[in-house]
Image (cartoon, rainbow, N blue to C red; front, side):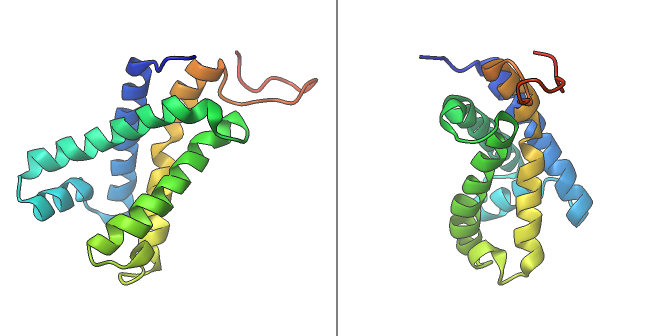
Length: 152
């Protein structure tokens, strides 16, 4: 049984969360919007919101590192499959309705669903280059006989 490389998973989670936030800033013009929502909903302050937001990013990376070998599909696609399922089930069907935004945020508008999925896809980019490389020894699978795209 393979063990999780905690340093790599944590680094991927932190890097992914920063990319998630940068994408959010580009899309909405607001920095740390998720941390602000956590602050607002819990009343525990912005520091709690930031810690919770980054903690969640790390937790998702650790979960992915643990189950990545069991996810079907090409190595490079596995983080995107993982985060797409997570976004649909936990964000669209659970978090958004709890916040009053409706399923997939559609009470706010379709841009909420599109933006949340885009942000999560950007979030997993470090998973391809850090976690996948650690687990599978490569970031992109190539067909036998084809030119290698990424060194092993």
